[in-house]
Length: 301
Image (cartoon, rainbow, N blue to C red; front, side):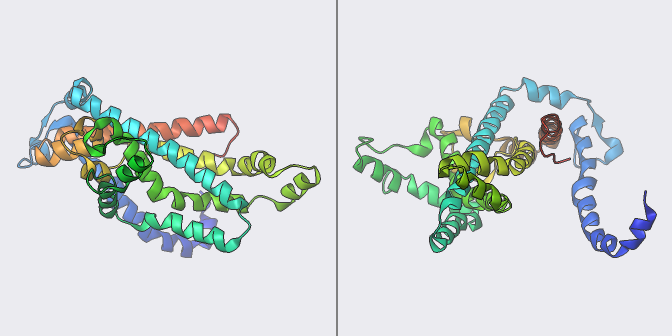
């Protein structure tokens, strides 16, 4: 360890100390609670009085049809959100980069990222109202266009739920996610576009051969980071829009943990489910980072 460098940067070290303490207290100390996953945890007993059961709760999870269904829902909605999020954010960033009118470009940017600042409570209210069978704008527009003959119960049929979640995430986050891609585009050397103009490249060729390759390092890093959240399909949207009719499609791991941990008091099973989610996330990050290294791309670690 270079102690001389540390002494020269002691002011920076002291400034970082509160953040390190915060991370240690709220991110590392709670890991002690993972021990509940290997116990029949009873709140009235202290640590030494708990009954240790090994991997009993993990065995139950992977043999339980409910958890397997919840895992399917979580993975499906996470993949949908991630794919749609990447495609729409990259597409919007590339299109905005081609807009020459600065006023129009800034207006579109502002309008697109405003939903990011809305809470999920407000967003779910807007979605539920828009999809209402009585005065919902979605049914009204589709009927006026002749695409459907009668209103559809969007929130009462499970086959529509994943699509609704994906579309809602795109509407709320696409503008905010676009910002980082626009920053990546701004860092591309303008001389590349000038050289392409001299070679007779059209706008689409410059987008394909200059803009997108220039964004690739950022795309790879964000992809690695998003893989770590592959089991984080969300909680608020699914919990607030979900109901008994679509429960088989809407319930995620977070809702499963809430149901068993708080409602039924099975803290050990809930901890096991949460621990499984964290371990999978860390594993996927390292795998994606290793693949990026082998392909010669930017790495997170």
